[in-house]
Length: 144
Image (tube, rainbow, N blue to C red; front, top):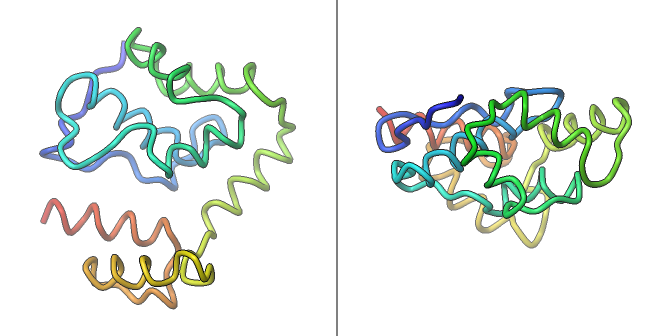
């Protein structure tokens, strides 16, 4: 049975941490458990970041939340993802994971202005940073 982190006192798992080959899974699960426990602070479950994972597998946050409520571990959720939604080969999963980890909102005209602003707040260079770089810097800044 997995217990919720208090995200008012500590950051969720790094988005880079791959559980069952899925980046974002540990972070998503930490946020979902914290929402259920009332300890999410500024973090949100089923947000656009979580939906990068959900969309890849063709599932919804509303399908994952009962797993979190039931106390499933991160690995159990990864195994559930493997057997649910859109089937993916290990190669497809790795290709997606590598692409998500390398994602640079600065290079996307629709997200560039937002990314410059949030990177400034986090104290990092948006032109040299990935989305995951920003998330880690923002988490670190929040808990200094």
